[in-house]
Amino acid sequence: MTINTFASVFKTIEEDEFLPLSMLFLHSFLSGVALIFFETTANTMFLTNFDTSSLPYVYILTAFVSVIAGYGYTMLEERLDIKMLLKITIGFVLFIIISFFILIQINNDKNISMAIMVFKDLVWMFVGIEFGILTGIIFNIRQGKRLFGIIMSGEILAGIIGGLSIGFILQFIDIKSLLIISIIALFISTILLLRIISKFQDRFDKVSTDEDSEGSSISTRKILSNNYYLIFFAISVLSFLVFYFIDYIFYHSVEQQYSDEKELASFFGLFFALLNIINLFSSLFISGKMLSRFGIVFGLIIIPIITLAGTASLLSIAFASLGFAFFIVVGFKLLNEVSDISILNPTFKVIYQS
Image 1 (cartoon, rainbow, N blue to C red):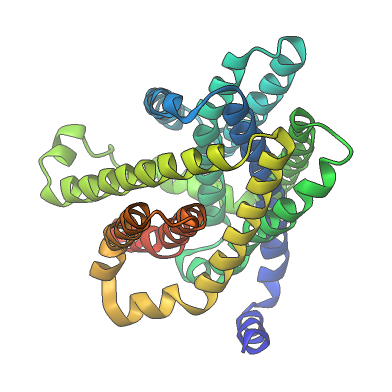
Image 2 (tube, one colour):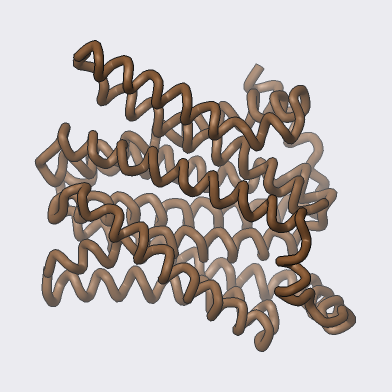
């Protein structure tokens, strides 16, 4: 079934699509490697130097930093052409990772562990923005719907390979040196971005022409007066609240289970590998069929359903004093992440397009 699925997908690739598809796949893979090693380092350093009671401060600081960075990105978006914007976006992420690596080498203060945890989500956000814009420029909507799954499998493959290799790599280097791998992967990904821009210059020129012909952007007041936008915003807020709720329980359980730094990093590596394996399976065989069968409403309520089921399971285990709560928490986290990536995100994209 898997072989037939992949074969049918690859048969739809046209000859002139193969080169850009290959380049975007590799770009996705390299960025994915950088993200996996950066997040593993951030999670491990934080739990080594802080306990989970500090996590609420991380969430609050992350919110402030993300809003400020998002506002700055919006300002740049209005002033720069799309090619320069993409270069600055990926360059900014590379700068963040290099800066943390240098800071750790100069002064291994535990507050750096807090800072790298705060900037972790920002790095994911900007890499996602850069890749989403780039894909939208290289391929039109029809091509994107057909090929986006293949392109994104590069990041999923990076999560599987990178996650499984972390335990082995840590036999030769320390946790902080994982950032070197992240830097190298993102540097090569940046060079590939420059190559993509140069190779498909005409597609970027077309986007610039289309932007010049557009009218003024919609005002904030008009957005806030539209119930559709407000409901969309409310659902997004709810999904983030659920995410942080599950995230806190997960990190608390991991902290109780592991105390050694390398054991922590190896666990996170295996977790990310398993997450991406399940996500690949879900994306190929489950999420699309479920959304087609049950519709957008199902996609929107899947996260609250998982939260209720997971919370009920954890409460039952706590009252029964059973000893496998850690595995339920890990399964709970995996289910939430997979549902968010393979069901909620596609649902949001459909709603957003309309």
